[in-house]
Amino acid sequence: MQNKTRWVIQATSGLILTGSGLSLAIDAGITKLQGGDWFFYGTGALIVFQAGLCLVIDAARFK
Image 1 (tube, rainbow, N blue to C red):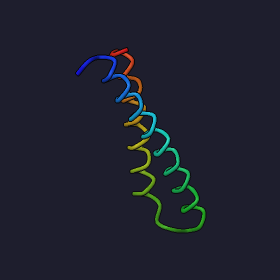
Image 2: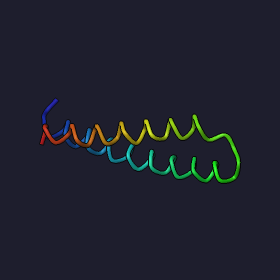
Image 3: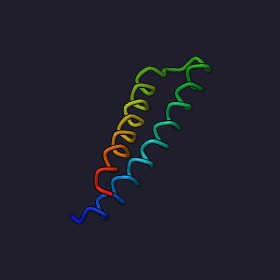
Image 4: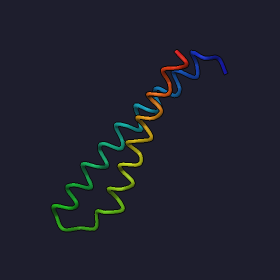
């Protein structure tokens, strides 16, 4: 795969995952305030968020 194409795909995927993880983490916080089960949901949200950050940071080497 060409470097620029890989950069675009990886950076875009990372940004989508980062935004999704942040949204899920906020939703887990709201669930916690309402007294629901939030621990595993929040942990998954943080994993998605961190994976997105890793992809965005790693994409810089392909630019």
